[in-house]
Length: 118
Image (cartoon, rainbow, N blue to C red; front, top):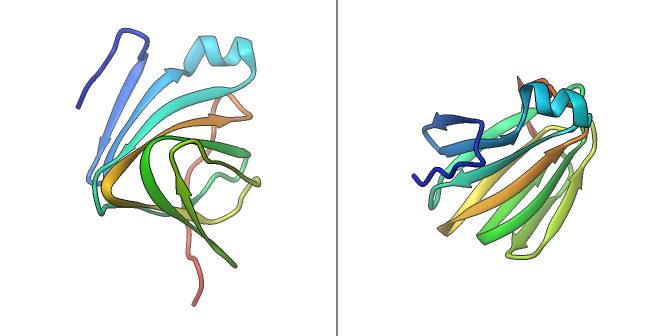
């Protein structure tokens, strides 16, 4: 996967990659963090939640399905969505994959596996 010089840290996952654009000291100073998320075609960033963070998604490329506790939201290039703090969610990429820019309202967002539905 591509990496550019504005990336401070990269995390690889079976579903794709998180390339952190602002975290650590810069995020502490700014009061938020941001990452570029790449989800490979047909893959799922499984159910999880951020107990201390609101998450704002901006779809840059491709399309995806955002699955929440009580709704499923299709998103495509240019779409945005605000996920409330601690809300369980998962991201399912479409057939061409998806690239998102994600903003968290905290410099160090927490992450926990979650369950959606029954």
